[in-house]
Image 1 (cartoon, helix red, strand yellow):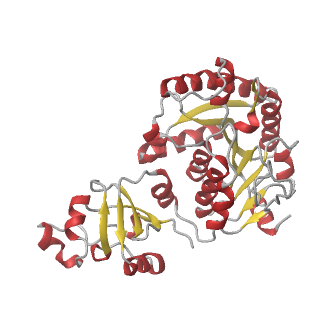
Image 2 (spheres, helix red, strand yellow; image 1 turned 180 degrees about the vertical axis):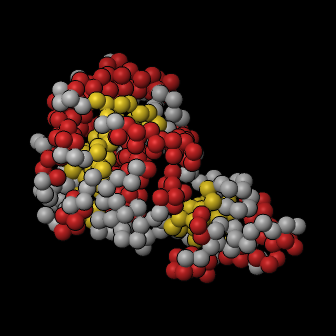
Image 3 (cartoon, one colour; image 1 turned 120 degrees about the vertical axis):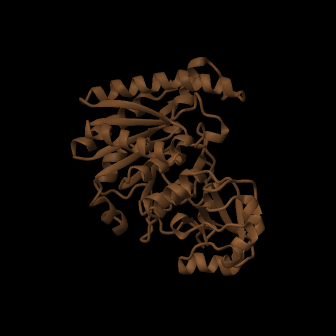
Amino acid sequence: MNKNRKSCFNCVKRVVIKVGSGVLTEDNGLNLKALRSISRQICYLIDGGMEIILVSSGAMAAGIRKVGLSRRPDEIPQRQAIAAVGQAGLIMEYEKAFARYGKRVAQILLTSEDLSNRKRYLNARNTLSTLLSWKFVPIINENDTVAVEEIRFGDNDNLAAMITMLMDADILINLTDIDGLYNKDPRNNPDAKLIPVVSTINKSIEKLASDIPGTLGTGGMIAKINAAKKVTAAGIPMIIAGGAKPDILKKLFSGKDYGTFFVPKKEKLAGRKCWIAYSLKPKGVIIIDNGAATAILKKGKSLLPGGIIGVEGNFSVGAPVEFQMDDNKKLGTGLVNYSAADIRKIMGLKSSKIEECLGYKPYDEVIHRDNLAITYYD
């Protein structure tokens, strides 16, 4: 077993498992054999003393088959209705599958709005913690029935990453219809090679992933890489593995080197900064100069008005705002102490000049370092 994997698996207690549409669906609806196999393996892990949270796709795909459509419709009301039809069948089959092994399940449907609001974020964590303490298996999916574009997670890979960070899980296992990350799409290239370990997610890794699209799901491989980027920044490892491989979960936890392992960063983002970086949707952009970027990235400093050279959007005090270089290089997200209108007035000025310009000065910093989360990588 790879030493990075071994050190991670030696201390695993709480696991988030994400199962994709490609694993759980077949031509005539849900792939019940796969669903039951994964449920059985999760029960095995629970009996071994682990806490498992399941993020499951499959509702939309199951609903499409059940309604009798050949593809996902374009109209939002139809898509939401299909999700409602599919979700009912999905959770019913999970309930039956887990009951065979004496386990009980609970369904949780979320939108990104539930996790972007700090109070609801903490409420979600408390609910999940309670379910785990009661020995229930939480089964989570995006609430497609009510979600609109502004409040969507976008895909269940992103949702799984959010849940992993929310619950301080020890590892995220992403089960998909491909055995891991390859150097090219293995479905079209017989000579494609599996990448067993990714130590750093850089642009070359993202390029590989972007060339491997999804099937029934919405994310594809790039969505899984984005999920890995988030959880590894929080100091949590992730594995992408083939969900159709017999007893894949048992094999992973017994030390087999299946799939692609993403090594977590040693210097991880604190819980609140993970929330700022990945749960909040930016309301605008602040463009900063090289000096400000160096101060933030290398010295852990706050963002002062003197380093700001541009503002995009209209946002209020306390809003999450992305900060980036003038070449569109995104550095991170922070909660602003001033509105967009006021930042436009004070940008380029020393902090000592804020009151003279605005008539008041509640803060020296536009974004304090405690409310600033860096997501940039080389």
